[in-house]
Image (tube, rainbow over all chains, first blue to last red; front, side, top):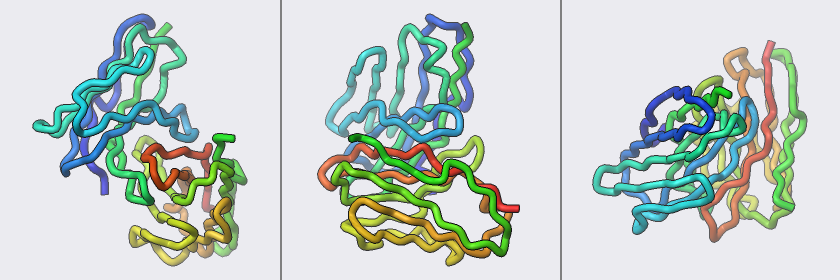
Length: 111
Length: 112
C-alpha cells in the first residue's frame, strides 16, 4: 500500500528555475525521506527530515515538513538538466521496517 | 563501499522458466529488501529480511521465493511467472540503526 500522494505528478521547468514538489502522507511518522530516481534506475537517498524538524537544507535542496497537515515539500533551487528524474517521498524504514513511497513527481528540466 | 549490486541488469524469461535475481552489499547492513516497480509507479515493497530472517512478506505470490543465504547476499527465485510480473525489481539495504536505504540499479525483468 502506498503512503500518500505527491503533486504535481509531472513538472516541466526551464533550467535555472526552482522546482517545488509536494507530498502528503496518512499516518503519523518519525521521519520523512526524499529519494531521486533517474530513468529506469535505482533510487538515491537525498535527504531525511525528522518529525520534530520543520525545515532542512542540503546544498540546493530544501525540505519542509508540516506534521499538522501531514505534508512535506521538496524545493530544488537553480535547477539543472541533471536534476531531470522522478522524485519520491517515503515514510517508515529503518530497523527493517517498511519504507513506503509516495506516487512520485516526474521532473523535467529543459535546457 | 556504499554500493548495492544487482545481477543481472536485464532478464527475459519464459513463463515455464526458473531464474534467480541476485543482490549483494558489503556495507554491513542487516536489513535487506526486495521491491517491485512498474512503469511510472512508485516501488512496492515485496519482502524484508532482518538479520537473515524473513520479517515481512507483503502477501507476495509464491512464484516469488526470497532467500538470504548470508548477511551480504539476497536472492529472489522466480518460477512460473506471468507476463504481468514484468517490472523493475529493486534490492535495497539499510543499517539497523539508520533509516536511509541504499538501492541497487535494479533488474529489468520481462516475462514472455
